[in-house]
Image (cartoon, rainbow, N blue to C red):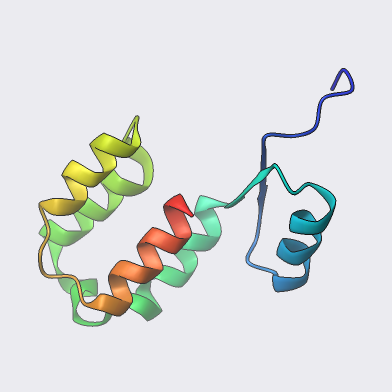
Length: 95
């Protein structure tokens, strides 16, 4: 990597790995892999699991947004999310 530190590191949701990344690469951004987010989404989304319109917006947020602004505009289209669902999505996608 030409003596450059990584800007972004993608992993699963392992707490110890996340902690180690923060200690070893404090200036790197730790992101969760979309496969893990998708796999855990249904347990956080409750009655929205059967909502076709919500799933279209969720998919757009997960894979179709080119910027944080586009993500937020798409996000704002769905006011049906519970607080826990919102926290799951924000923590998973953009923190």
